[in-house]
Length: 304
Image (cartoon, rainbow, N blue to C red; front, side, top):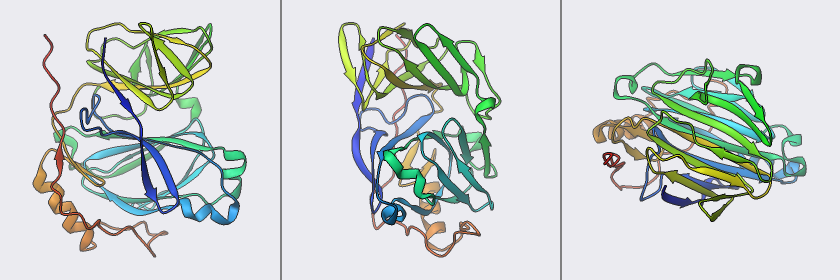
């Protein structure tokens, strides 16, 4: 019923900002089209250290970044000229396509008061037909994201379709992404109709088939099975998955179905051919001095 349990690892995304990295993982680089997942926070720092968390302008190709906050706020700026504050319950969906650069800055001192900054960022690999699409950005407000409640269950559909819920968040392939909060004793299953499905325990603890799983673990479920998760305490889950879009190469912030395209993106960033955000272009993250070849995600095993 559970194919794999992925334990989050510590990673650094800026000089003072460590996160829990869930995807990619050496044994499972993707769940559906989701190829990357970070859980940041909760973070509490004095105001004078706020800028240490800033993620300077950096590039992407071949993917959509999806930012979702539990607490605090973040200022997004990108090379399209977009400036957008994201707050809890909203979704920032940026499609890199042929290439975009963006920054994430923490400019409001209240963001860190009481250790309230906490966010999840995922990347969704684009289908081959959309990998070179024009870059775009959209912020979706909470009222655009349907909520369902039942006894001991609260959930918000972030994107895609699940449990009969849909919204207008523009995706490029079949997927689902949900924020779920369970009260102690609540029972919850995974949505049907999606081949690949995972549940990340962001907070709390659940039990599946008699085994306990805790915060920082991603459970990847066997296709076609109908797992039941039981909350052992108040628990926050992020459910995600969908249809596999095919093998992908990933290197730094670049994702592509073609290794040579990533090499081109590396050269483009180094040569300044990917524009910086017009209102945040004084500094940027240079191309890492890493000569490793892009790693390829494996295609899923066929159903038996």
